[in-house]
Length: 82
Image (cartoon, rainbow, N blue to C red):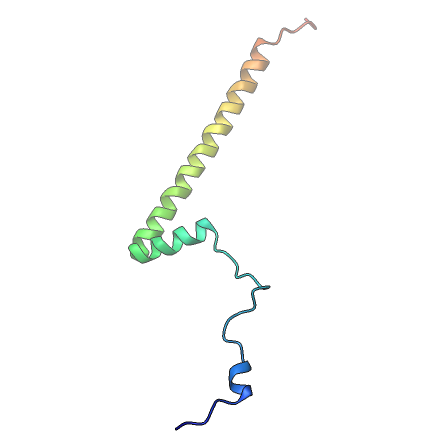
């Protein structure tokens, strides 16, 4: 028969205290982990580069629209000085 465990062996906690919550991963981080598991590194890089190009195209389109709007405003303004 084995002796009973000592008080020191049963007093050590094995789990984290409940007062300290574990940080939750962000959705973006979780998606990148899934992406890295499903695709090899070259495909993941290509996808990120493509998304960066889409965002840059959107920015240029927005800038172009703002310039067109400003030019139309200047062209339709009447000059009273002449």
